[in-house]
Length: 329
Ligand code: SAM
Ligand code: SF4
Image (cartoon, rainbow, N blue to C red; front, side, top):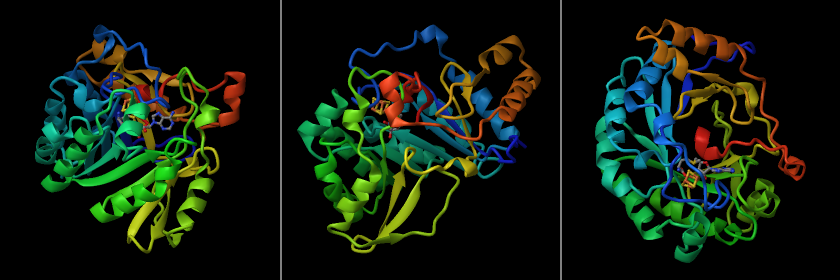
């Protein structure tokens, strides 16, 4: 079992299987983003081996993310391999995606054992969607989301609140998600990586989003408290749960049960901190997993108490230098 020095039990692993993406969302990365060379990236077999070791050590939930996980070649192989563990040691296998490849893969994802997916969607307007994602095709994403729904996947929509960009669509997104029975979570922009523009210009506090919602809907606090960063309200008119991830205004670290690995085998104990452990070396040095397990145990002991994101720090260029696409959100 993995227990950190603050007695938090680590049972959730997020795996970024690629840093590459077919979109370039303007709050996530610059248009001319440099991606890793393929030779630095772990093979799917190596990622599978790391995941299985974490499962052996007590991890119950796995989320596959990226970059865009579904653009990685043969990615279904990993889903099928990990899906075999469901019902035994593993309780949940899930995915965070931009939805661009969902039409193609939704059925396979369901077959592999995935039941819930998070899809990032920041706008329901074609042109605005293109402007935010730079390369995204809204129709394709919506078709993908509907395919996922139709094959039986439970869909949660994640929307980053962007000042002056999608704040006029908050109510429409709630309405659309309500009609389709999707839960919806709003996220505040986090200061991660250079994006070639000012984040403060994009930042919209979710307290403003809540105020906006209350101009049309009645919401009450939902008692649901997960180990995740979101707090929830219930929206009565749409009978739907709405989540808020507010790293700048709400501290969610005391219940944190997760760690992350990147596609190069770096293990991050906190999304908002720099400390990491190298898992590539121990898996390449030996076919036996002992050294890998020892590295993981040692890293868990170093898991920090919490992040210290602050949007204003960006003024002093002190933000977390990695992009969100490296650790997968
Ligand atoms: N490509 C997939 C997607 O977009 O869902 C998975 C990876 S993406 C990095 C995971 C989540 O991080 C998405 O919901 C995205 O909107 C969010 N994200 C990316 N950069 C962010 C930032 N700087 N602040 C807050 N959320 C961010
Ligand atoms: Fe790609 Fe996801 Fe980042 Fe958008 S948020 S650029 S879809 S990794």
